[in-house]
Structure formats: C-alpha cells, structure tokens
Amino acid sequence: MHYEFEEVLETLSMVALDHFDIRTVTLGISLRDCIDGDLSAMERKVTRKIRGLAKNLVRTVDQVSEELGIPVANRRISITPLAFLLDGAPKQGPARLAKVIDSLAEELGVDYVGGYSALVQKGMTPGERRFIEAFPEVMSTTERLCGSVNLASTRSGINMDAVKLMGETIQAMAQATASRDGIGCAKLVVFANAPEDNPFMAGAFHGMGEGDSAVSVGISGPGVIRHVLSLYPDLTIDDLADLIKRTAFKLTRAGELVLRDVAERLGAPRGIVDISLAPTPARGDSVANILEEMGLERCGAPGSTAALALLNDAVKRGGAMASTHVGGLSGAFIPVAEDTGMADAVRAGALDLGKLEAMTAVCSVGLDMVVVPGDTPPESLSGIIADEAAIGIVNNKTTAVRIIPAPGKGPGDSVEFGGLLGSGPVMAVTPFSCKKFIHRGGRFPAPLRGLTN
Image 1 (cartoon, helix red, strand yellow):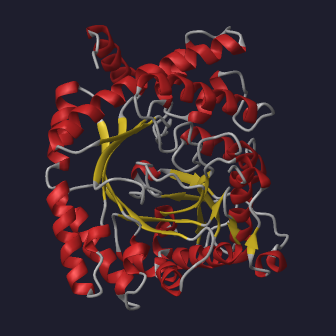
Image 2 (spheres, rainbow, N blue to C red):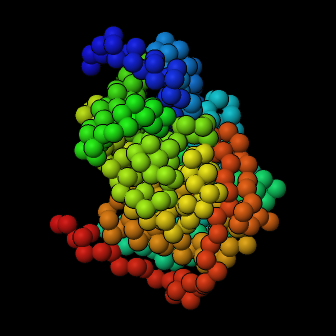
C-alpha cells in the first residue's frame, strides 16, 4: 500500500492537536497446542509459547511508533479462551494458570493480556462453571489479565443460567476488590455475539477460527473527529456524515500503516484494524463531545441515539475503505468512566441508565465502564446483562456489559480508577426487582433471524 507524504503530515497534525493515538497493538496467540492433562506441563508449554512469540512485541511497537511519529497507547496480547484449556483441570487450575500468564505479561512489558474467557452461549460444562466461579479470585490476584464471557448469540439465544451466574460473579468480584472500588469488575466483559478478533480489552481473545498468531490494531481518534466537526458548524446531516466518513478514512490509514509495519517486523500474519473510536479521560477526547458538536446541548438529550447511529455508521463506512481487513468491534465506544464527556452528562442529569441502554442499540458495543451502587442485587446485574444480550441477538450485533458495583458507594458518589479507566459517577439502578425472572433459568430461544441457512 502506498502512502502519500501529505497523509503522513496530516496524521502528525492529528497527533499534535487532537489526542490521536493508536489505542492498541494486540498480538493474538493460539494456545490450543498447549493443552495438557498435566497442569504443570501445560503451564510450561503456555510460558514457552507466549514468551517465544511475544518477546519482541513491545520493542517492535516502540520502534514503529517512534519512526512514524504515531503514539501507541498500549501493547497487548490476546490468547485462546482459557476455558478451553482448563475444562478438565483441577479446581485450582484457573487461578494457577492465570497467575503464570499475569507474570509473563509483566516480564514481557505488555499492558494487558486478554483471554481469561469462556464461550457458553448455549450451555456450560462443569469445568466452565468452575472457571467462571474462579473470576473473583483470578481478577483480585492478577493485575494485567482480563477476561470475558460470551453467553448469547443470534444463532443460539441467551444462556439464562449463565446470565444468573454472571450477576453473582460480578458482585463477588466487586467485593473481592472492594478496597479499590470494585476495580476487578473493570477487567471483565459479558458479551452477546462476541467477535473473535477484537483487539480491545477487556474483551479480547484469540478466537478458535484464528491462526497460530496475528497482529491486530485498534485505533482511537474521538478528539480528531470532534475537532473537524467544530470547523464546519452548519453542515446538513448528510454532509456531516460524509465529513465523519472521510476523517475516519484518514484515521484508519494510520492504523493500517502501523499494522503492516509491526506484523512484518514480527514475522506474524496481519489480523485486522478495529476502527472503533475509543475515548480517553482527556478533555475533548470524547465520543459524547462529538455528539454535542453535532448539535446536542448535552449527550443524553433527545436525538442522542440518532446522532450516535449516524456517527457509528459513518465511521464504519470510512474505515472499511481504508483497510483490507476491518474487524473487531469497529464503531463508537460509549464508556462512562473512560469518557469525560459521558461522565459529565451523567452528573448533569442528562444521561441515565435507561437512555444509555437505548444508545447501546446503535453503538459498537454496549454498557461499558458503568459504575452502579455497591449494594445492587446480583439479580439486577443479571437483568441488565439480559437486556443487553437481548438487544444483541435481536439486532444481530455485538453487545456487552462491563459494569462495576462500587462497594460502599451510592448514586451521586464517584470512583477514581486512574489511567485509561478514568473516573466515573455512580449511576442509579431501579429498585424494582427482576429476581423471579432471572431465577427461572433455562435458555432464551434464538430469534427467527438466526435461522439463516
């Protein structure tokens, strides 16, 4: 692919003025050939495989970033969902292997490893249940390991037994990390229709349909789009969409350039460019601020869902033209704690949990980094997960929940996580119960649109 000199200059301008960075370069690694009935032998195989493939990851990404003048915020690894490796392991297996991988991440200098994950959309084996029940211990005793559970798909419906279990697990994780405002929950995503090539945490894993390894890139750029829109305040809606599309094209070209260079130097196959707009806690680097630049007084006002739908579609259109392989989540993230504009909208009373849920029907993921009162019942957490899963399977899109019950905190309080996780207000949850519905268990039938044969 040929890159014009003007493109490079334009990218450098975006970096200097508008907080643009490559959010993550993620090396996916298959661990399927590490499966062993002997847990110690499997730990040795996993260590050898990850160390062998990722030993040069951080150095290579740093070199490419410096040479191109494009900041890369995180260097990450995604691995085969560990539930596949540990299904027949003893009870202590998940925590043991998790600590080995977490230590490897520190040794290699990577920011996060994704893949403490299970795919249970149709049912759970006893081993998978033990694996999920180990989440509180695993996430409270590791720093860099992240996890996910896919419990629904358009093809399979919703595993309501897993929905109930995840509500209980999230509440237990919050208590296990209560001294840090339940931060363990920030390292877990509950999915419907999870993509197998997502480079973003906490939901990244190296899917079963992937090869032995692959390099993928996740771009950022909300600040760039917000700035460009501010230069053209009187555009019609269709011209607004075109401007976003053209800007997303430029952002994705930068991501494609980083992907090609890193993959070539590592000798690894190219994966995908995820063209998601990933906000940060920095002022102005906010998806909410983009929506406000489009004409909303505050994110959450009437019209917010429509504006977000336009933004999401335009980003996909522009990005798809700029890269051979676009994948992952690709669209606009709307996390609360990680996006200062979203958090401000909640504090101003413009955005509540109900409106946020409506907006997830058209964003690239779902309820992300939402902080709720620490005493929220597990069944209410499960109900929120079930609602998002229903949106996902009915609309045949990825939806997710990353929700944090903050122990000892209530509506109006705030939590501070630091770094890219930011800070966020505690959002109120309705006091009315869904306990009987959640305790029914069973499997929510797949929608008819899932019958595509």
